[in-house]
Image 1 (cartoon, rainbow, N blue to C red):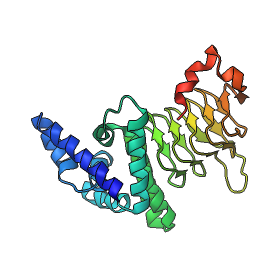
Image 2: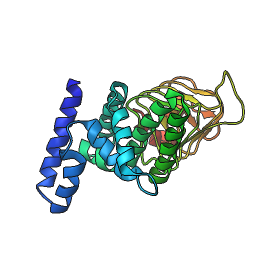
Image 3: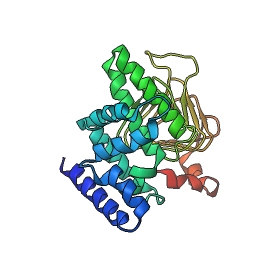
Image 4: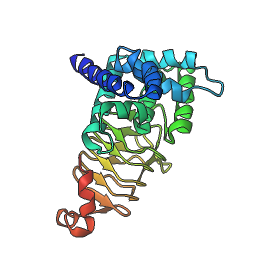
Length: 262
């Protein structure tokens, strides 16, 4: 709770300073940030702006978002996601920029609400979850099934083209670039059709992890790689299921991979 208050105070300070510099931004920031008292309340406002319209009334969607974003589990996840983006992305100079403009962050927080609704299990909650999934897909260019499980401190960088299937899971502090697919092959193992990605994993742009495989902690999957076999902890995979030896991963040919390790 103390950390949440610290993050909110910093966000409020950043917004106040920016509002003093522009009349246009002052009006926007007043409604999106300065009129609120918590990160959850402000985030619900920002997401409602992006998800409502075309038959979905903002006055109906905003309270649903606010209720779930204020739950302790989602608050912890949101704070971890928010600070993780600033920690590792040079394009994110401050928390306010991520809160207002990063669509990967927006899409992930929408998913967290959709997942909470899906977990309720009743028909109305699941239909609402699917509605949020569809709106997030249209607004942010990513498609994540509400049942999919995603840990804390996850950064969906750019997010466009990210597809995460129903029984997929992602652990804590993972870095997922645009165009990543966690998909199925039609094979089911223990009720799971999609990949299980553990913690501190980096998934390169355009990579596809397919079927009920496991990607171990601290693994790295290169851009446009195709993974249909389980990946051991700390391994680096490129091409089609090609696991690089440790000495090979450090060569000049593959040194571009090193900055993805988080």
